[in-house]
Length: 387
Image 1 (tube, rainbow, N blue to C red):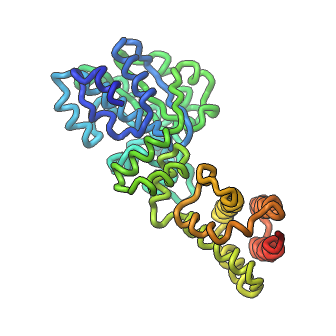
Image 2 (cartoon, rainbow, N blue to C red):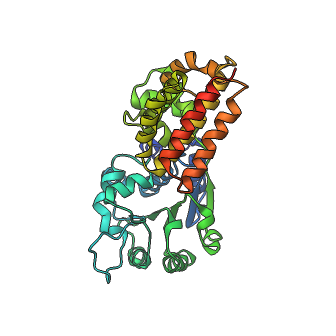
Image 3 (cartoon, rainbow, N blue to C red):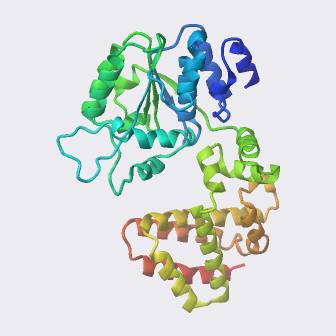
């Protein structure tokens, strides 16, 4: 990162990219395109979940909007609150219950909620955004009201005399009418206008939009960058940061999940330990109660729990090889594995994994969860006896 900033340190402050974790190559590429005056009018940021696409887009927008030294201090003050008049955000929204059907929903309907979320940081998920909007079962989408709003905003002249930047978060959630109007806008963009599209599913975008954007394909975050961010930003010790970085596998959102004390995986870990302990004790009565408890979770959580169980089976089997480089366990999981791993061996590991996978499939096909989980727990008893 230092060499990147040296490229333009006399022209610009490092603060623009301080929120970005890793991604030095991407930042260097964007800065170079700008400095060489080769910046396309539409960029499409793609890459795996949690790699920091939105963080890079927001940082790059700040870089573009503060290049004019005479306007820099004023621009930085506005960007500190993400309220620069030449920066526009476009994002999917819900239609709240009771909204007049004649009203065409647009991003500005949830501008306050959006600003509150991005002020907390540039790493967030659709689930977090839905929660901010108070969504129940609604899907967040972009309709014609959004494209009409963008056309009005982008037609205005730059208030600061430089770039106008529009960050479009999840353009794949545009309906066809909205996407076609956006296409016309990026085909004939106003002068000094840059569109930064942050996309999770580029295959769902119109081919015509894809062909008019330059893709910035980002990679997963380097483990060392995740570890460094955990130690510097979250105050973790090196060992804990290293464990979480390996578990996160280049996904900063997953790293944050691991830090969350209310993390769902902790619940799953407790239920896995309980299942294995009760199965080892052959306590059918308590296993029935365990089955009834997890049957109340709801199907999506049950499926996530079963995926976690499959991971634990594989990790405990690998633990028997005594090679830490092959294991991806939290400290709590490793402490459990020290005594439990020997029960997962060549005689049962495949069938145990297949058992959980089969229940995962059946739950997804609306099978009765009480019956499925109780039958599964009884089969675990027999599998643990194998040596």
